[in-house]
Length: 152
Image (cartoon, rainbow, N blue to C red):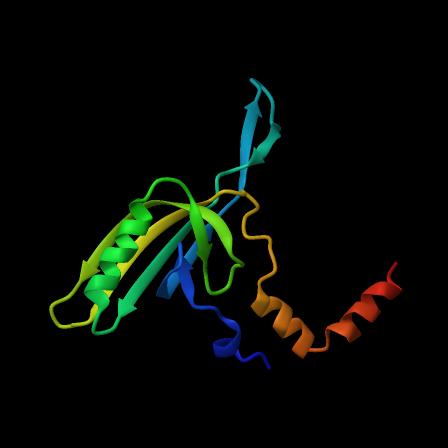
């Protein structure tokens, strides 16, 4: 069985590390629906991929979380895209669209962020991460590849 704690990466943006509580990928296709008068059929025209969005609930927790939060805010506001690493998805070039920083009185040393990232490549997260590769090797990738080869 996969040891998730060992295969998930520490998240970062432009080299500034943070922890991830929740991440959500929104991706899909751009479609034009053609509906004709008197028809009972809709013609669907595919127009390519819709812009993918990663919504991330990130957090910093340490005695220096306030300074780390200032640094994370600064790199998200910097011009242009940066290198984004998320725990499950492989690293990618992305732009931080917007973010919201929050803290609570009763959670000293903890600062949360809700961030939206837009990846430069619009592949909807279709990449293998090192965690995927490690898990595949550990779970007998060679046997699976041999079975797959028999199909062709």
